[in-house]
Image (cartoon, rainbow, N blue to C red; front, side):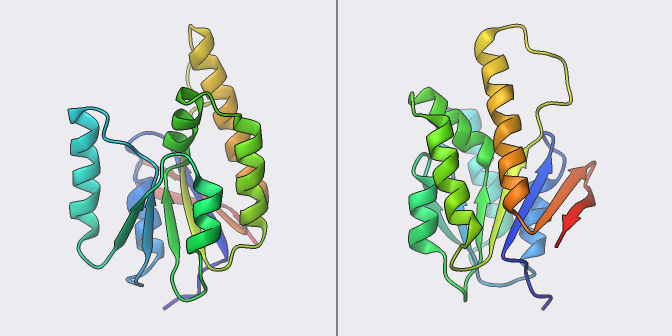
Length: 172
């Protein structure tokens, strides 16, 4: 097996193949899937179910929609990588809950600076399209851009996925 960098960020647009690529990076290792999505409606429940079926029974799954930094600090360990899918849903959850996004991001970055084991994070690149027509959507897009920039600055490897094709942006 190829050794994993301590931290990897996989970016891409919706349905770009970023989650599949992130899972493939783990190369069959036993891993913990740290899910931030919540099944708040039938469509999201179906998406979550599709992801679970694709991963199969060898994956352990832990759902944590808000306390990502604290959970990573608790579960990261050298012998089992953690796949966080995804930072975009985590951000959405934070904003819906009225949480301080900058504070939560600072806590996450602090943990990612020296995690106890390998962490692969998935996030959407949402800044390549049209400027949203409402304040909330613009705030979300702006926060997402800052999340991606700060996490990418810390991660040892950053990959952008488009049309299922990975492009390595950074590799320390």
